[in-house]
Structure formats: C-alpha cells, structure tokens
Image 1: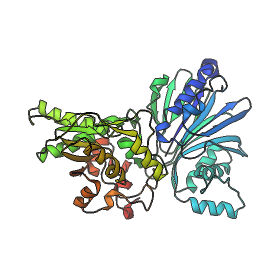
Image 2 (image 1 turned 135 degrees about the vertical axis):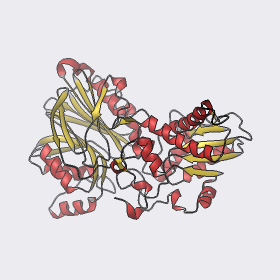
Image 3 (image 1 turned 180 degrees about the horizontal axis):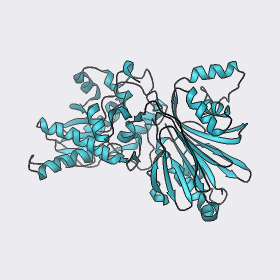
Image 4 (image 1 turned 90 degrees about the horizontal axis):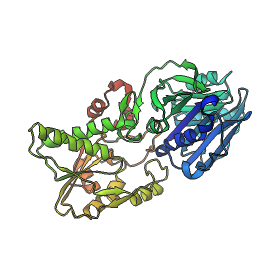
Length: 456
C-alpha cells in the first residue's frame, strides 16, 4: 500500500503557496503508508528529489522557505520513492501504488537484456520495473501505454517531468486516483479526504486506464487505455481509505455505516440485544455508529423496544501510528498493542458488541483486543465484522501475503470463536458488501473474500 499526491499550480497565481499545499497534500495520504516519505519538485531546469525514512511532517515540515516550484509529486509508503530516471524522454521521477504479479518474469527478461537494477535490500522495487518499461516508449504517454500491456497486476502512478505531472490509473481501476481543483491549481491524489482543508474541490475520479497530464494549474492532455474489466478494491470503502474519502461518488463513512446496520439487523432478527456497542478505534468507529443507528431507527419506528448504548471501551492513543500498513509482523503487532488503551471506567457485567472493519490474521484480536476488554470486567464480548471473512491473500498490493494464516482459514465457526476468545462472531456477506457500496458486483474486486483458487 502507498499514498501518492501530485500538484501543479499556475505560477502567476499560486507559486508562493505551492509548498504548503504540496507538503500537506502528501501528509493527507500518510495513513496509506508510514515507513518512507518522499517528493520530487521542478526547480530551475531540473528536478529536485528528497526521500527519507519516516513521516511526512517530521521529515519535510520545515521546508517552506527552501522548496519552491510549480509542479511536484509525493509519496508515503513502504519503499524509498519517488524513483528518479534519465531516459530518451529526459529526466523524470515516478512514484507508484499497486503490485506487479509478473515481476519475476519481467526482472529475468531485463537481466537477459543486460539491464542492471538498484539494490535496495532483499527485493527489487516494483517502481523500478515500471520505470524501465515506461522508459522504452517514444514518449512518457507512449511508455505508459506499453507498460500497461506488459504487466500483470495493478497500478496508480504519478510521473514528474519538466513540463508537468502525469497521472495514470491502471485499466482495471483497482487502486484509485482523484482530481481536485481550485483557482490556478490542480491536484491528483490517492484519496480525496484532505483536499477540502487545502481549498480544493473534488472534481472527479481519474477513469480506469486514463492517463492525464497537468501543468500550469490545469489539465493539458488526456489519453484512455481500453479496459477489459474494471475491478475496484471493495476494501477501500471498508477500511483502507480515511473515513471522509469518496470514490466513484460514494463516501467511505456511509458504506461503513451501512455495513454496521446490516450486522445490527441480523442481531435484531435473532433477538439479540447487547448492553453496549463499541468500535475498535479508529477503523471500526463508523461501523459501530451504523450498528447503533440501526437500533435507534427501529426504536423510532417502534419495531424494537430499546437500543444499546454507544460507548468506547478502547481508546486509540492519538500519537500512535497505523499498524495495518506495516510489512513487518513484529512491528505490526507491537504498534497494535501500544496504540490501544483501556477505558478507565468499569463495565462489570455488561454484554458488549465490538464492531470491527475486518479480521485478517486474528492474532491482534486474540492477543490484544479481547484481553483488554476482558480486563474491563465485561460479561460477554460479541465480535461483529463488517467485511466478509478474508479467505485469501491479496495479490493487488495490500499487506496480506500468500501463505499467511488467516483467521477465516479455521473452517469451523465455533473453533474460530474459541481461537479469537470471543463469545460470538458474525460477519457480513459479500452481497451485504456489494449492497452497501452500491456499485454493480462486476465492478468490485472481492478477491480476498473468495477462496484462493477462485480469485481473478
């Protein structure tokens, strides 16, 4: 996973405010990746690039007097990007979100042809493979077109060239890119959530297969690569995106509330009435709100007699990081433990529904969340999960990897309940997920909710 952001301004109108919009635009993608931050900007006749291990604001927050420009791209993720290139198209830099499935075949082919790769640790970065493919084109637009035909996988990329910023979304549309505009400036981002704070209005999603160039604060050129099938990641709405993001015109927070409501309806049908509904913060919050609101709606309609109280039994420490994007298992579990604190109130004897967006491996629920809830002396912990059971690794760029033990691989639900340490466990179904998002099933990727052999 990674977050990317690009900006172009009209120098006659916005040059003095470029750095504020640019650095904060990158910052608002931070929740998508926290290991590295980087940016490239046009400066003079060249491109200036800086990357650093760490967070955006601590790394680049003091650059407002040093970094001035009109065009730039930024990155937050698990690799050191942007990646700088010199090719027949001149000097340019690139950053990338996604995953290349046929990376081994492409690397082997490049090596046979005499190419060398930058050694960045145990693996060759996908962004370098993509850069080599694009560099083989007669132009950057042509190179992106050729690259799209070569790779199996998915991508969202930003390229900074001397004449502007190029944004491209893969024809499958798996990972999003959105466009924001204000007078004299145009931005492209992985997500829309922070655009409003910077004065941008969300204009539209970049289309699957679309390549667009922005410069001098406006769109200059577009091209569309034909798509043989659109598959937008459904997990964007469930968890990955910040809650105020919109994709395809659909707010993530609304989808999460609909999913929580679906879980509540099934509990009501079973006659189950908890004392309290609470989220796993922060990702479970809107799911729990939806669960609670569904009870309240039916109380108002006099179809049920009472609603559970909404409360927060676990609190996320505000200076902690997001644990999910981490590639390292120990670091992920450590951050998950330290970010959640128990309430100081007493919940002795309460029957509690805990709402979560998803259960992946289940180890954080078992080893961290449930013990903390039991420590509050609750009588029962009932886990309600908005996403359907995760049955497969993600081949498109999320952090679940092939071979990992997923909680849903325990086929017997009673054994899974025992493993997690809860009193009951309920999930939404794929049709609930599709209905909550509101797009046709064929436009959504639900591969991780399907058995491994049926993916694709």
